[in-house]
Length: 233
Image (tube, rainbow, N blue to C red; front, top):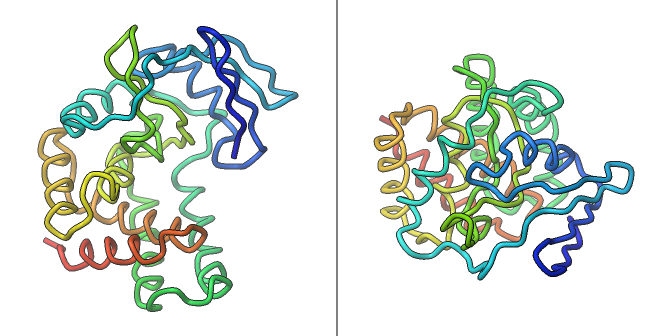
């Protein structure tokens, strides 16, 4: 998606234009270094920007859920334009997910596609307060830094309800890939952040299946979605 080059105390990022990362610089600008890397300069015509460099820049590994529970509310800024809405992104997934699944060779059962579409259609028009969301927030998008212990990178921003932001953490295989591990993350995150468990579960199913059909993680994502479907209240 991008070419990243460290240069002293800054990092140059040149993006391959893509709808998911179209407003990354806007998100970093809005966060203004609050829990995320600080945007230093941008050149929208060249799809390029400079951010502060994280040192030592290692991935989040120790007590990841505690760190993420602290970071998430700081990222939930009030926002509107120019960001894509979660409702519009959900509509995109609903319109493309079955064709993408067919094109990928039907890597898992169609029932998961049906479930994801139904859930997305139900959740999108019934959302709560709209805030800026990092739709790819997993431990390898959180880096050790000096200005703060941990800083978020690579937002792929959307504007929607808070429950959606848990989806990439719930499914993150680097945090443990088992039914127990996935459901423990769902329960702990929704409890600690006082979010609706069923809506978070639904968004995790919907995005996980939507992202699985165009990735190398068909089997892992499908398994995660099955566990979450079985865990209905």
